[in-house]
Amino acid sequence: MPRYPLQTPDITTPHPDNDRGFPTPLGDIPREVYQRRRQRLMEQMGSGVAVVFAADTIDSCHRQNLDFYYLTGLAHEAGAALVLAPEHPAWQEQLFLRPLDIEDNRWHGNRPMLGRASELAAGIASVKRTTLLPRAINDALMNSKNRELVYLGPFAGYTSPVPKQLTVLREVAQRVLGCTIRDGHDLLPRMRSIHDRDELALMRRAIEATEAAFTDAMHTVQPDTNEDELLFTFERAIRTRGCRRFAYEPIIGSGPNSCVLHYTANDRIMRAGELVLCDVGAEFQMYAADITRTFPVSGTFTPRQREINDIVHEAWRVAVDMCRPGVTFLELGDAARNVIENAGYCDQYFHGLGHFLGLDVHDAGLMNEPLAPGMVITIEPGIYIADENLGIRLEDDILITDTGCEILSTALPRTSDEIEAFMAKR
Ligand code: GLY
Ligand code: MN
Ligand code: MN
Image (cartoon, rainbow, N blue to C red; front, side):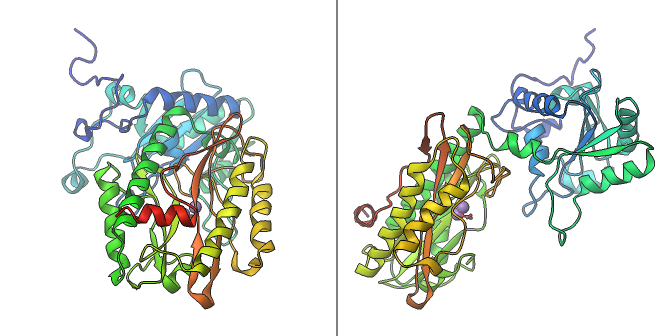
């Protein structure tokens, strides 16, 4: 009789069917990719014991912890923990899931019993309950050479809550003599900021859906309609292309709202002669797009709007032309800022030039290190003249390649002439 006759899942193909009840990666990235990521992380740890926690709550407002997701592909396992201990060939990786609660099952659906099948499904050698987590961390520590705990989380500002991972490691260190905590905060950002082929495929899907949504919005915008109607156009377009949600709260800012950097009320009537600044990104299988275009509500720029759009476009162009391995964010930012300052708008540009993009819209990465192939960044200069109700930002998503860069968001117009011609097609 086979050892696992009924429950053994097909481990070669991730399956989007949650009814199977296994903790299994649900997206297009195969579980072998997650296994390789964990192996690579453990090679870089070298020794010691690390624990990465899932989010405590996952619902429409709370996403999975992105380090945990990056290492497991488990988008829906709240309250779980992953323990990595590279020195133990047999127990290098252990996944701990929340205890079963039969009352909770009636509210949120059945969760499975543990067994060999869940280990196979998750691609992790050992799957247990979190009630065993404290003992497992101690066991791994006691069998390690130096009794080292490795902190893999980000450093938080002193006004932020202490990260759970650091709290737990400190609690362990108080109880296990001779135990120290090693700083590994840069390991995951360094890995996460270099995207592999599978990740780039998902990011391209998010970007294509976002471009299609901008196309619909630029072809349907009308004076005397509400910003919210434009938002609905964006949402319908991304959802019909398989994106379940936005990667961040969209900004649809017309007239005076184009100058409010984090405007998200999106409920003003747009008037002829005004600009509308749209900063929107779809999320596809946890990966983000992040695009901004600013266009005239009636399809035609005024001479003044055109003048400012040309300066922002020039700042964008100068920065994108410099994108290649070895360049730093600082150098890109200085180059774009010079264009805007030389045009006389020093005080009207007051944010950074860009950021890493990936699982998060402001994704993990080491901003002070030179750019490297596989990184995806945004370039997003802007000028905001509140006295004139005139705010313009231009934002695209850029892949750093071996020899330079590839603009991933290519389908949308940027110059004033291109934007007017594009909108004239409606
Ligand atoms: N949408 C957020 C940003 O552009 O950074
Ligand atoms: Mn951005
Ligand atoms: Mn943006």
